[in-house]
Image (cartoon, rainbow, N blue to C red; front, side, top):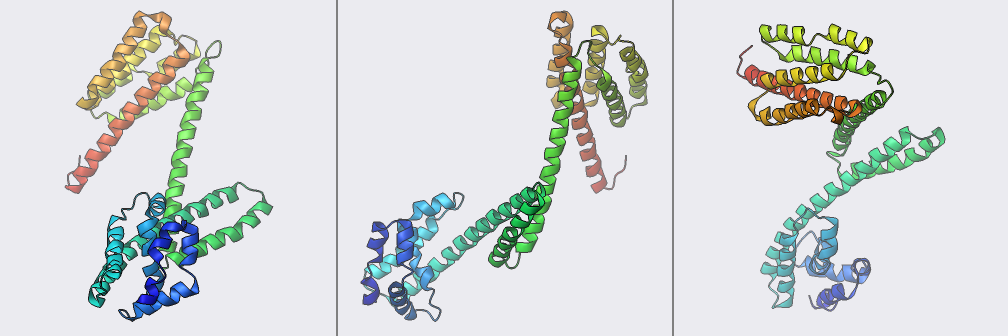
Length: 332
């Protein structure tokens, strides 16, 4: 006990920086004297685990910076109680109990730290994977050994779930890439439409496709035969595409089509969307009253985005209702 106290570890942990103190507690003299102390209370020594408590007491700010989402207050509290046992009259039973409580908290922290490290390695592994796919053959060969080392570290740190985590992460990455790709395709689509509409005269080929898509989508979310007939009569895609072909899809036709579609969607959607749809209808009416504000390359992309987003929301709502009914064994 006295030999261990002669090390003055608490004071030294304050004097030295994190790196130097970590080096110090790993030297042979410190390890041997700590081992002698722990032999009196444990068959298993846990020498390095015990010495780590000085890091939690005086270097906790560094550990907190590394593990921002982990609360180490319990671990610090256990460390303080253990140090107090050494400072006052030494009681073997009290020391042993406090040491066991400290080990419980330390193992929870180590588990969290290990998971964080594994996740960091997995991030690096798939970052290299993406880099490898986009590299020349010679660079691909250079990256492969690094990937193997990282994978070995992952499987060493988490022998039970390491491979499973790698596989699951791949699914997440693939899904995220698909989402990003879909977003980029959409963005490219709207940019292309805007560029086409900025031409003189505006190029409306993409508008034909959008009108057909909107018509099909409306038919899928409309269950009333009467409303379906109304859509076919007043939103006649063949007629509208002929207007476009003959350069007759002008201001009045565009405004009339916009108002019909928005009013139809208002009849199909749920009440919480009413206010927003009314704002969209007011916007169209305001453009109609102030035609000087009408810029085709801005108006049409905006209007079709609104219409398609609203149809998408209704579709999701129908699917949600359908799934709920299926769970209750009700068919529609």
